[in-house]
Structures are given as structure tokens and as C-alpha cells.
Image (tube, rainbow, N blue to C red; front, top):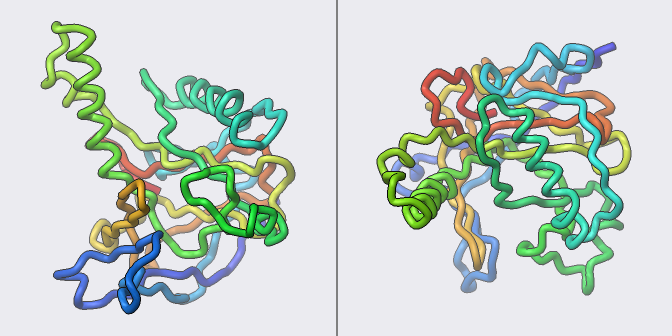
Length: 265
């Protein structure tokens, strides 16, 4: 039986300076006195987080920006080598079969997370290497859209270069017409059903584009962009109670198709 929850979520707090200065977070050492982040998030009014358990089929990537699927992955280990050799190819195959009209899938990043501090504390020296996705991060606790616009643009150029180098008959203009979708995450627990920190996702069709504020996140080896939503009482939220490793959540960060109701989750 579905178990709806009522919870407060942490949203970006608007500052007038954002009209001239883009919000950012720097994941690196910065000079003394230089702020590593120029925005803040805070708790807003309690919201109902609707449980999709038993009603999973009602939600889709096109209409809502997220969808749940039943699928069993075969994973014999959770070290980086095993995951990249055995698990990532399974995810690519799953996405090709699951996403309608998908012709190619590329996994551009992955990450392990854990709410257990003892798991995160097992790293050598207790230091997390953000460049190593097998280093567990804590669950994200602020509302955000993992919207990788920079990555999508770079991939369009990459596909164009690859196509032109392999065949002179494929023109740049044709590559630019390709549909690009960023399924921002294939999200699932790896061992046991979730007992705390379940992932809540917003219905992308209820998001107001004017509430989405672009923000940069910068690492020493990578620059990306996501969207930080402002609080809006009209946004609808969902989660799955007791999500198991076989309950696979897909959610979308970008969609180039005009007809899609939900451009992101």
C-alpha cells in the first residue's frame, strides 16, 4: 500500500546578484577569503512526497521526466574495476532496450553513494577523491536538476567529428539534427532495500522553467552545469517506498525533443 510522506526540502534561496553573477560551487582548494560557493539553500514549506509503489506504470520519462522499471542486474563486486567491466555495459544494454527509439547510449559518469558514515570513512586517510566514482559520497540533500548542458553540446560535436572521420557521406548538419536525451541517472540501491534517504523526484511537467536557475560546478578536471529550482508549491514530488535493487529509477536531465512534456525531472 502506498505510503505518502510529508517532508521539507532544501531549495536555492534567491539573491538579486544572480541577475548578474551566476551561482557556482568550486570543488577544489581556493585562495583564502574566496568563497567556494556563492549561494545558499534552505528548508521550505513541508510538501507531500507521493509514493509510486503499486502505481509505477502511471509515470514515464516523456510525461513526467522519471520512470520506474523492474530489472535485475548481475553484479559480483562493487570495486571500480568490476563495475566498469561488468556493470556499466549492462546499464548501457538496459537503456538501449528501455528508452524508445534509442540508437546509441554512452555512460559519461557514475557514482556510488551511502548514508552510512562508516562506509565513507573506509577511504585511505578518510579523504574522498571526487575523480574516483567508487568513493562513496553522502546522499545529496538539496533540490537540484543534474542538467548537463555543456556535456550535451560537447557530445554533439564529438558525434559530428566521429561521423565525419568515418564516412564522408554523413554531414555535420545531419548530426546536428540528432535527438539528444540525457537520462541523468539510472538510480538504484546496489545491495538492500532503501531504509533511509529515499530519492525524491519532481514531476518535470509541473516545474516552471522560470524557477530553474543555472549554476556551475567546477572541479580541477571538469566543469559542469546543473539547475537549482526555487520553491514552488505547484511542483509535485514522488518517491518509491522500500525501493529494492530490482526497482530501477530512470530520470531525465535534458531532452532536445520539442514534444516532450517533461524536459527534466
